[in-house]
Length: 227
Length: 53
Image 1 (cartoon, rainbow over the protein chains, first blue to last red):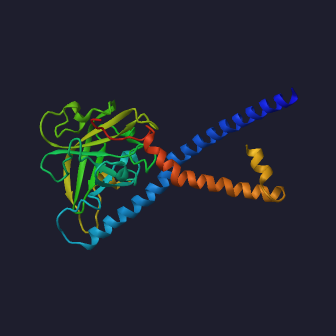
Image 2: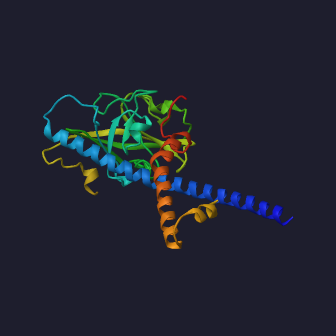
Image 3: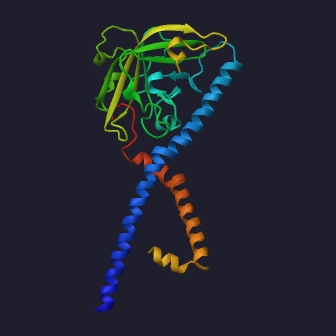
């Protein structure tokens, strides 16, 4: 009788330890997702960003090189500094703390194109969390894209706080859902929402307001001067 | 389970505590370096793109 009871107690105690272990594992996974991936991604993004800037400084005018990254996104309202933009939106690219422009399902235009939609994706949490504060963007806020020789200044005109992840129409060259019907030079930011999950997508649309040539000191446009 | 590990570690209590700490750190390292990067894409927390699939 006593032996049977102690065996039951042993089984219960192992079961309890397994539960505690599972809890600790999940806690560690949260630490990994929300902290450690940011450490790794920010380190990698800094390195790649510096490479692009070195490359710009070393080479004269020439064809756009899309391999290293095409430029930097500055969104003062998101308070996240500059975000390197690279080609493609596959996880291996985005996990390095950069934003990617879409190559599929709808191919993105580039800012230099005469018309089209420059469509970007980046992480909301973890892996640099470059679009974490996307919900802070309001109509009229500036989105500035910096290339080797041009500042493209966009203004936000529409935000869509929640849409299906299957809604690829938001990436169309003329994003009708934003209310625009004519071809123009648009920018679209996409990320996941609500925070810490990816049930839906958060969309922000902007339209090109003006362009500025980059001068010798790379003086930023007025929108970024307050930073 | 953990009691069994503790009883099978060599040395006095301090030695065992030290070895336990090293073991815990090793487990955390393996998790962060190999297990979590593998598990993450399988979990639905971090898809940020819109796509047709």
